[in-house]
Amino acid sequence: MEGKVRSWFRAVAIVLVAFTVASVPAVGQEVKKSVPNIFTPNGDGINDRITLESKETMVFVVYNREGGVVFRAEGRQIIFDGLNERGQKISDGIYYYILKDPADGYASNKGFIYLSTDKNTGGERGE
Image (cartoon, rainbow, N blue to C red; front, side, top):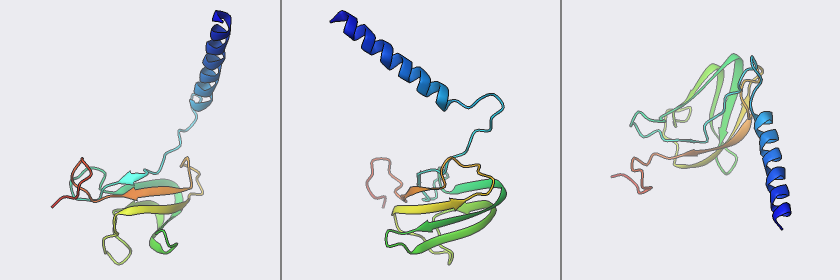
């Protein structure tokens, strides 16, 4: 039994080392940025906006759960602060985004963003 346990641990260690080596960028290789998956545009100065920057012009589109566009921007720098294109606050919730970056500087070009204006860390609505 002890031999099987050692073999199992050795196999797990090999997998972990292989995964770690594959996950670490090589020296001189550019590390890709990531789009935050949560932000809290509540005016407290922490995570109040998502800022995207690229060497080339990007297109960033945010959709609500019905598939409607709630935010769209183009540029080499895009700032999403929880307001739609008319300057109105977007409701708390989960949104889907698509990012088109010709410079390929981001690890993912689509995903989900959770927007929360909650000022309390406990998850209860602030008054």
